[in-house]
Image 1 (cartoon, rainbow, N blue to C red):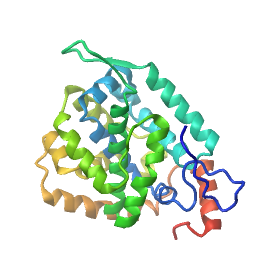
Image 2: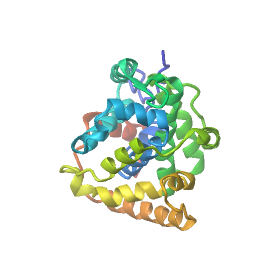
Image 3: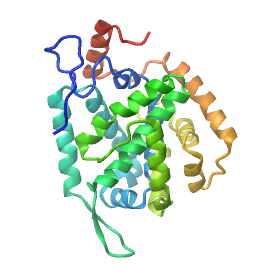
Image 4: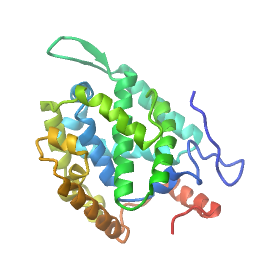
Length: 281
């Protein structure tokens, strides 16, 4: 069972995994993190078995449903971040039960595999957290020390879905990717799923705040150079600089544009952060 850290301003307030003193609560208020969510899915697609299992079990490969799947993932991240203990455990239990029932098979060897394999779950976790923290640092939201705190806090998020031995710093994240890279490759499933995701039409009010193709292109540009090369991009250093400047500009823009109404749990988090004196100005 995962351990809850109670860090709220009052002992009788249940703040789930994180709380108003955490970097996680502060970071996930930022709309520009949407870019990190898209980046995560593009990066995660480079694991052959993870993507094959997704292809065989998911609506990601139906263009009409691709964005809906992304929204469901974002909703889970929101509950995991700001939910109470019971809300987090209920959401995590649903995810664990779903993954436990799903199987994939390698058509080349006929070998079956589980979608809840701890190492596969670790890959998905690391792709997500690396994407969020990279976007946050480059957009000017987090300094290096807070970025490491965020990665360390995210271990709690890994544990509730069954991922094993999650990295606790950006250096450990980088070491993980160095270790796993030889097992990654671009598959037809990855190409299909990524194209469907990047060309998905956003419904209102998302379409007012963010236009998918430019944001998707920016998400792709923020990926590590080795990952961009696997997709056939040159992976030039100038792309990194351009992406960083674009992220800073996008953050400045989206904070001024009304977006979808915030969930009640996020509104509650803002109130608790204000009471604790940790709400960003």
